[in-house]
Length: 422
Image 1: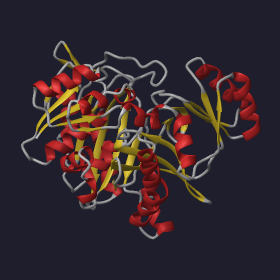
Image 2: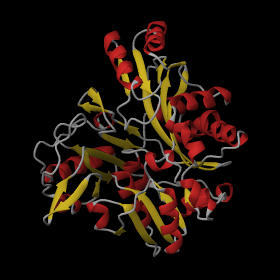
Image 3: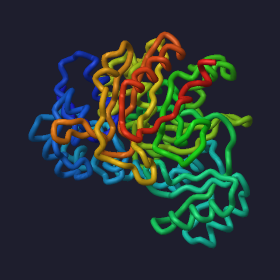
């Protein structure tokens, strides 16, 4: 199958790696890709947010499936001209992608579908935001309504910090002030063909920059999968997944279908397990990063078949995805100054040594080649992913691989998956 993957991050590298692992002879192209992806497959300098250009490229190159990785092309509506031209595409339309592009839209859909979530208050002015902050009380949760690269959410007990966050993001559009929900967070992906869904395995990510969940929010500093502690409350991971499917994913997908905006692609459910039950924190309209890096290495079912079935409305006839009985851990290496002002252009040394370790793979996010040398080109530079028979082995392998890599000023968390290895 000829497959075009749009994106340039570790998520897209993980998707490409999973497709290559099928050894099915796929011809895979990634646009625009990065240095690590370019070492594995062909990359093209194609603007992934330009829908007509992407559609023209796909037609000219006999592409059979387009997989849209990041949120920006989805919000830009890249899927729409592809579908209009008869090209199978895994990724929702512009209208359905508003589930991620607008927190207010997502909350409205949740309310209409009776999906459990925290109470939201939308604010278009600072006076409205301050009133909502005071009404809902501490801890304060303030979110940018639109895309913010993982940096638009603030959870704080400092009222002034909440007001300052709202003030900043109101310059870019509305904000949403939410009821605070306390509990363990879970990321759970569902493939959707617009009517039917298929679940993947849960993961947990680490959003704060520093050990012990301190510091600013980031796009994610690490993750692990599966989540053994879910069995303590639900009896099994499968029982938890089934409950979320029935209470959250399927009602949301069917509601969007009812409204004439079918969601075809990956529904990312950001969940929190509270004493009152599961609640939705947020929806995303694509594979999450870094959770994808630990979910896909455990997937036993060929990914290409699942993506194509979702893109062509055939998911209802596909058996539920199966997973290897492995533990997976990923640790993100970030540049100095991330997330506020990452320092770029510095060389990366030791990536090949890390890749050579048993059970370890390095998935590139922001890398390039300068004068023949691998360099960091952004904030989150790469993910070191490791699998093992248990979390102790996977975690040891991940950090051993990370220690092979040198990046001046590089930063990473040292406590990823520590709680499941005690």
